[in-house]
Amino acid sequence: MRFRDHRDVGDILELAGRYRDEGADELVFYDIGASPDGRTVDRGWVERVARRLDIPFCVAGGIRSVADAEAVLAAGAEKISVNSPALEEPGLIDALARRFGSQCVVVGIDSETADGDYRVQQYTGDPRRSRDAARRTLDWIREAVERGAGEIVLNCMASDGVRRGYDIAQLRAARAVCAVPLVASGGAGAIAHFADVFRDARVDAALAASVFHSGQIAIPALKAELAAQGIEVRLG
Amino acid sequence: MSARSVAIVATGGANIASLSYALERLGVRATLAADPATIRDASHVILPGVGAAGDAMRRLRASGLDRVITQLPQPVLGICLGMQLLFDASAEGPATCLGILPGRVERLDAGPDRPVPHIGWNTLEPRAASPLLEGLRAGDRAYFVHSFAAPVADATIATTTYGTPFSACVQRDRFFGVQFHPERSAAVGARVLANFLGVD
Image 1: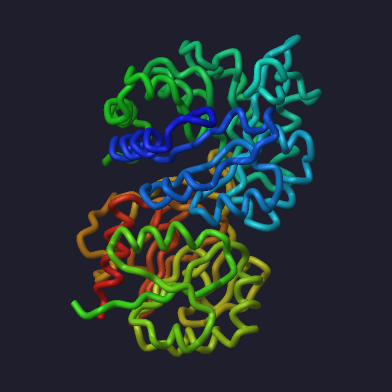
Image 2: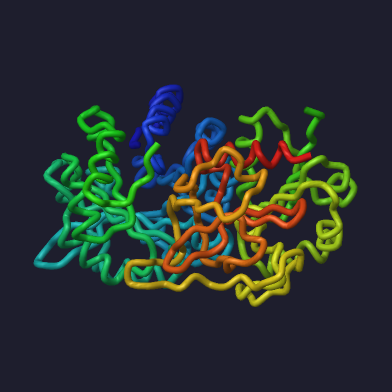
């Protein structure tokens, strides 16, 4: 669920409640402008979401310190996800895992394919500041897990928003080096894409935003079809 | 039903909020308590858990709560690490735990298709009748997040499987435990919490 700073919290609550009722297994809230703007997440809405939701949710964007993470977790979030701040200071992952346990520390990675390799991108929330983070994606996954990440969300940027399917090759490569749960992100455009990524890239979860927001894919229909194909899902 | 006063034992973790909210949704206001008197006075006691077994046990011992908890006559529910603490010991640390249930909590076995921590919605397979499981059906799913688990033992009332089967729910007398997070397990979790609060 992506939102810029001033989107009405009422909208967020309503949408979150709708996805919960439709059978979403987890929600991720991205404040994608937070890191480029040097902001931290506003906590008020985290608490309101936590009061309402009875499924796990993760807050991403603008968590730059143990104190930031503590505030978000204390407000009721299950997990916090760090991306650009972890690239600036990788020790943040160790500190978060030590303080809260790996199970609530997610490392989000935005990755581009370049020169036959996968490379990490930073500050992708702002097109003017987005840049190559001078790291290979697969190396960064290994390092993040070694430092204590309990889950990796790999957003394959070339696929993101295009709706032509997840980047199976990249996710498969990531799977091979990722010892913790791996979440696929970027590219979902049809129900078949979800089936493909679970079957062919063996990811633990698949994340999508625009196809759900637009109503193009309904979660109950998606889950019913995955179950029919023998993929294990939670049905309502 | 008589008035319920729920005490959540302060074990030092950051995420008590989601548990409090889940109880609020059931119409129950819980008190976060670190002192023996408040815990003894509660009608129901919840031992939550985040963090590591060794740290949690150190904190409980430092405040004398380890002995308070083991002697409580009222219903007690351990959640996640809180359930693991009910056992004799945990491989995490390793740590000596409360010893209410026999057995030792072990680290989950990682495999190629089985990353650890285990994060996900797993099925519950009831194994023995218990008020905690009232209204649940075999195959209902609950949300698990953990790296350690208790083996299937006499106290196991429901199992789940991640590689090998382990205890998803346990009960011995009025001590209950769930490895999953009922506060984040949608309707199934709400039912388990309501069932616990319904134990007199």
